[in-house]
Amino acid sequence: MTKIITIDGPSGSGKGSVSRLLAKTLGFSYLDSGALYRLLSIAASRHQVVSNNQKGLKSLAEHMDIRFETDDEGGLIALLEGEDVTLEMRTENTGELASKIAGHSDVRSALLKRQRLFATGEGLVADGRDMGTVIFPAADLKIYLTASIDERARRRYKELLEKGEDVSLRALAEQVRARDERDMSRDVSPLVPAEDAIELDTSNLSIEEVLETILDFKRF
Ligand code: DC
Image 1 (cartoon, rainbow, N blue to C red):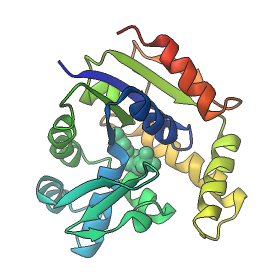
Image 2 (image 1 turned 60 degrees about the horizontal axis):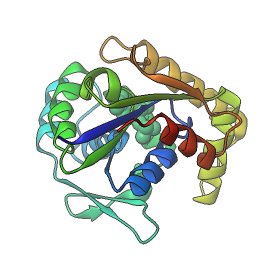
Image 3 (image 1 turned 45 degrees about the horizontal axis):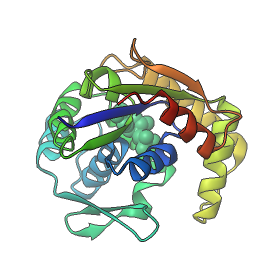
Image 4 (image 1 turned 45 degrees about the vertical axis):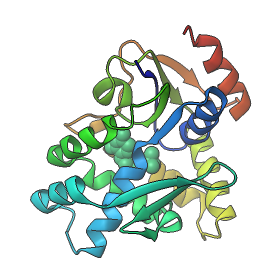
């Protein structure tokens, strides 16, 4: 049986970096479920499927041609219909659109099947919003990461600056807050900790400290 560790939390909580590092440390595969929603939103723009066209989005979610590879530093490379869309995938605009289309139940159930296919081999670290509640409810270890809005906005700010995106910290804090609200208040699979998740506030912790804490919880 594939061992599964789920890491859920809002954007900027550190789940992406920690999950990648955790997967590498344990030799497990890694599912960045947000990347699927992000790729779907890019595919929707390319194919002119608007964000309220549930049927069109569902069909795209079922059939879109996506592939993930890893670069030399262990970063994720995303290919949509054979084209490298990694940079476009990480922009704030793509994240916004992803958060909007993630509210459609048909989209979520189409992506549910694709996400579960990642659970092969020895182990999987799955990062997202509903990994422990909906996609892998029987996971071996469930972690829910949080951090203050200010700290999460600061992290995103640093990340985007490094990528050359021109953003204001204050506007970013507002975007983070609005995205939290949308992700936490939607009807289908809202962002909430699973009942059996271990909650960890990462505001004052380094990625390495979060990793060590999670490894301490691992009992398999
Ligand atoms: O983790 P992220 O920022 O890459 O995710 C982008 C958006 O996708 C997020 O705002 C909500 C949606 N999402 C989701 O609804 N469920 C997931 N498991 C992962 C992401």
